[in-house]
Length: 112
Image (cartoon, rainbow, N blue to C red):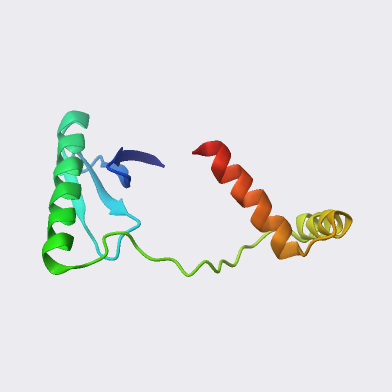
């Protein structure tokens, strides 16, 4: 998926061939904020304006702009991978949850 980034927010990007327009929405918020443009430049400007407007709205309304997450996550993996993770966790002397948590945290840190 193509994305835009501005002030710590991510915007999804898609193209409608039928309408000949780029469009997207701000991801990771409690709400739906869309933006669109006929060129990459217009789309980027519309995204920045949408984020700025959203942040101003949140400030005026006393709303936390970022979506809150519980910290609990269910994932689906193949039985073979599940088995390998269980073995590796056992060898490391940790729970499967702790093993996966550590692996995800390392991957996120490497990408940030």
